[in-house]
Image (cartoon, rainbow, N blue to C red):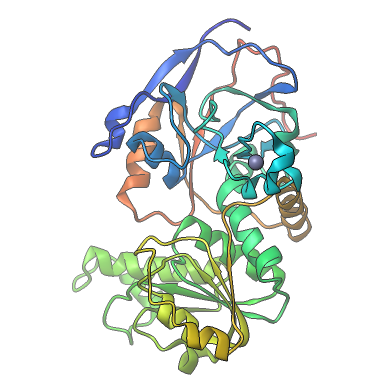
Length: 374
Ligand SMILES: [Zn+2]
């Protein structure tokens, strides 16, 4: 138990060159404190907030070195990624209502304590949740952040149901892809909004895919068609761009999942039916759009913020994924030793789905080896 294991560490804050702060270092697994468990990690998924940890940006004070990673799974369990940070939980709304995503001082595994990008992780015992039984550890590792947020958007904030029309802005992002998959599995009509569509618009997607790389097609043209085709395969009913008028294309929508911010806020509000719901979970293009308050009160719109979710949301997500046999989209799998390549892939941007690190089975942990399916 005392042998060192390789861990993906953030060694310091590097605002301009985050990957320079990344290192694979040997780590002696720490002893357990009261109420903690040590769990085997077989797979850990990457998120953009891991890059912010490398840059030194967080809502909570960061200390280095820190084992990175909020998302992980191993041997049939996955980990609830949100931590509370209150000295007196009874005085905090989130801590006292069993929802650490609403804690005044909430943080993530991999920020305020060591994370999942290592062969084992030490966590509060109540952060271990059974994975959906039909998923591999690699697939289950994708669920804790992006899919948890998308679940909370759809089921708790918007209370969507089958037949609803839902516009997803920033559809190629981690939360967007998760929402399209979950909403489609629910039976909702999912409208994916992407930034641009390659020209010419009239070209048949399938033909363009087959013609990718052929004369007359630039690489990015083939990529754009591939993205659109993949979103449709994941469950989107339509793929629109920022230039498309949503209402005239698909009619008024019941719900908008707004992950982009300033660039889409106005068109998102305009797309909603009276009494519709806009759920905000991101502001990658800017955080201060014109509020358009008259439209909000005149049309009776609801605006709700979501960031991650409660442990109970994660359990409900697991049940929903199991019931619908949904599988998270894995974009790429790298061995732990290639963490730098994996993070470089994440930074490059054009990733549809999750990038996952896979750990070697850890000989220094006294756990039963993984065996084949019975
Ligand atoms: Zn709290």
